[in-house]
Image (cartoon, rainbow, N blue to C red; front, side):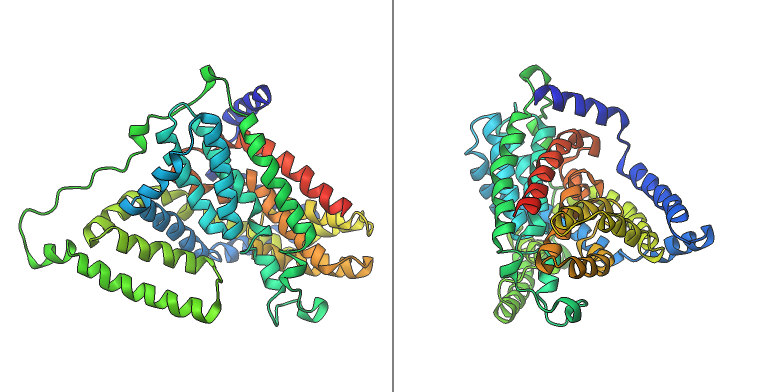
Length: 437
C-alpha cells in the first residue's frame, strides 16, 4: 500500500490540476458530450450553461457559512479544549490516522455538513499533537469519512422519498427510513466501510523518511489584533460580552423551538445556525468573534468562484437530457439482479457532473424508478443505490473537498492520491453488497 499510494501521489502531483482548472475541463467535456449524445445544438448548450450558472447561489452561500462558522466555532477556547482533549488520545501517527477517520465517519453519518467541517478541524488539531504524522494522509483520512453521508441520518435521497407528497410519490409512494437508512442492506454497507476504511488509511502511511509533516506553529490561530486604546461607546460595545449573550440567547431560543417542533432534524441551515450562534457565544465578545471570522473567511475563495461553474454544468446535464442518456445506457444493460449495481455505478458517474444529492435524484429518478418498476426491483433499494453512487465518487470530486482543503490549507492534488484507493475499496464493498443482498 505504501508503494501504491506513493505512485498515486506522484501521478496526482504531476497531472491533477487546480480544482478551478478541473471544473473548466468538466464544463468543456459536458458541452462536447451534450453535442455528441443529445439533439442539442451549440447555441442551446451555451444557453443551458448560462441559464444554470447562478442556480447554486443559495447552496454556495450555505457552503461558505459551513466553512466560516465551523472554523469560528473550532477556534473558540471551549471547543479548542474539546479538540485538544480528543486529539491527546492519539499517541502515534497510526492512531491519529485511525482516530480521525472514525470521528469523521461518525460525524458525517450524523450530518454531512457537520462531518465535513469537524473532520478537517480535528485533523488540524491532531497534526499539532502528533507532528510526525503525514499531514496529507491525515486530511485525506478526514475527508474519506465523508463517503458514508448519504447512508446516514441526513441522506437527502432517503429523506426525500420518506417525505409525504415528494415529487415521485405517485409512482413509488412513501418509503419509510426503515427500508432505506435503517435497512439491513444499508447498515451492512455502513458497517463494512467503518471496519475497512480506517484500516486502509492506516496501511497507506508513508515511510518516516517520506512523511510530509507540518510545523504545528503554522496551524495555530493567528493572534488577535490589540484592542482599541481609546475607550469609546462603540469600542465598549465591541468588547461587551453582554451583546454576544443577548444575540446568542435569541439564537438558542429559536433552536429550542425548532427542535421541539421538528425533532432531531438536522438540515444544512440548522447546522450552520448552530455553528454560528455557538461561535458568537463561545468567543465571548463581538470583537473576538469578528476577528475569528476574518481569519476563517480567507479560505472561502474556491467555493465562491467554482460553485457557479458547477451550476452551469448541472444546467447543461439536465436541460440537454445528457444525464438521462447516461442513466438509460446503464439501464439498457441491466437485469433484475444487476440493476442495483448498475444504478450505483451510473449515479457515481453522473455525480462528477451533478455533484448534488438532491439535484442528482431529480435528474436520475425518473429513469431509474421507471426501470425499477419494469424490472420488478425494490424502489427503496433503487433509491439507496443512487444515493450511494452520489456519495461514492465525492471521494475524487474536488467540489466537496473544497471546504476541507480550505480549512487544511492544502491543494486537491495533495490528498487525491490517497482518496483514489478509498474510492476503489468502497466501490467494491458497496457494489458487492448491492449485487449479493
